[in-house]
Picture 1 (tube, rainbow, N blue to C red):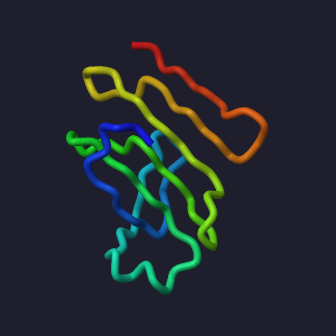
Picture 2 (cartoon, rainbow, N blue to C red):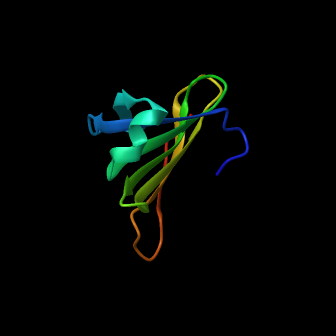
Amino acid sequence: MPDKVTACRYFTSYSGAKLPLKLVGELDENDMRNRNTYFRGSFDAAGQLIVCEKMVYGETEFRHEYSYHPDGRIARATIDDGGDEPAIIDYPA
């Protein structure tokens, strides 16, 4: 996980198809005891989502890592869905 993570939060789902994913339905950490499926989001100091993981029965089903241009727009998405190689999408400045 990137070393610039400042907050890890939990969510029920995401909305939209555009990257970075928009996590919705934030959960309190105490709600996690009874959840089999959830999304874990790690955020940087600016509040940008830098890691998104879908957790199912304690296992990571997929993982996205995001980096951003200085102006806040997404620069790169690395998507690991458990296949052979993660997909990398670059967004030019």
